[in-house]
Image (cartoon, rainbow, N blue to C red; front, top):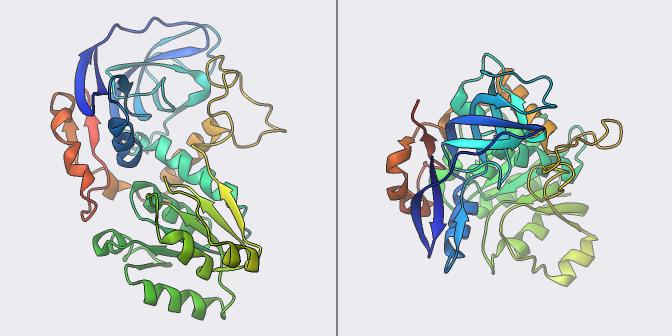
Length: 334
């Protein structure tokens, strides 16, 4: 089977062996997987002298069910999330805890974004916003766009910001979201809407080792508000501003509880529902519900489809952020 990997700062297609089904796992024939530009470009940069699998969000058809996978059947369409089990590969062997059946009214390409959706949902859960509160999303790449839509679906007041006018304009027609590429207009709008108090939470979805956002966001947040680091940004916050507002700085890691936990992922043992309400697998399911009920619209994210054999040539184009292309969907042979 064909698999896409990063090696020596470049992209390669390799031949890999077909996975062997085992208990608590599903063997999935991939239909689509989604490129996550921020994560994958970072992995490519770090691939000098080693081979790194790329990708973590996909959809496909169940080919075989391992023992102990009750609730799944051969032929089911399932969304799946989480490296190293999910990657850009023709076949995937995925723990049942990282798989969810796709509702009949959700298109496979929409379901392929389930991993991105789970990460966005978990980021919002980290901020623990209450009904009627205000959020600012700074950085409108694929993840920032997704967080803005989910936050809007949850009835929070959403302000969105990106230095790219193209990226900000992608949300211009979404009811109840105010999107800006002009920093002064963003700050004026936050001040006006909150009567000068500031936003309840800021989600930093941009990258950069010396990003000015770590300073700017503390001017936007209210007293005792929250700053959630979602993107690859260094947390260098000015002490006076942070302490002056007693701002909370929080980290959002991946798609929820269970990520990197061998018990949950490798051994496919779910957490008790009453103790851990929203592990990563249930966040995947929640994303699918939002799409199924038309509470979010991800169709603009999945317009550009590339066949597996042509994948290696398209990564460079994703580096340019002044574009409406947030990602590309990889299509696999039938």
